[in-house]
Image 1 (cartoon, rainbow, N blue to C red):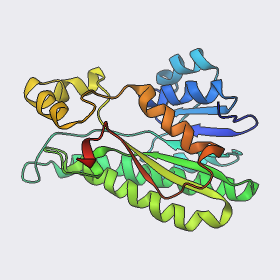
Image 2 (image 1 turned 120 degrees about the vertical axis):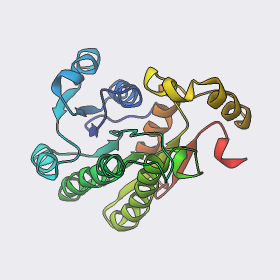
Image 3 (image 1 turned 180 degrees about the vertical axis):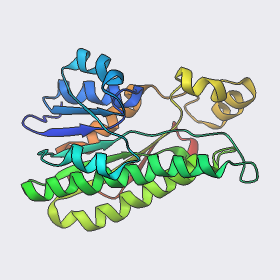
Length: 242
């Protein structure tokens, strides 16, 4: 198992399924985890379960992110906070929803990276950042104009950040998961006309679990991935590669 003893790692979106699974794995591996979310109330279950330190801020607010992260001695970050927005075509999309999805998924992750990387550079210990992207950034998915665009932007943030931060020993990668079939996902992906054809196209033929995503995130944070940076790792049962 990876050892993160004496390493402080910030996980945004920690109240969600993937974020929570990541917090649990990192705590088990000895990390000092800061579990971040939009409200302290929403973080109570994961904090009670793991002993992680809660931290609340709005991903759309630069001032809140700056104030929350200033003074933290961070070694690593998992940008897992995000919002799905709507299912709509380019013709039908609500631009206000598009703007909010971009503000949370892309702009918010960049702001966290901006202020977290400053801490990591100050400490001079290197570190690692993992951005939770999506298969929707790698292939065109019906109805995903806003979400897919936000995650494509996040993948480019990953690549440019890897290029710029490598000189400080900071690695930056993304994971690009398929659907994790939570109640939030099931309203769309659970429809027979959507689920059936999608799984038929996927070589492994099943949706991901939270731990299917959390495991590779922890790997990319770990020293086992010491020579990996700027990568976008599909965790999609082969969907985007066939």
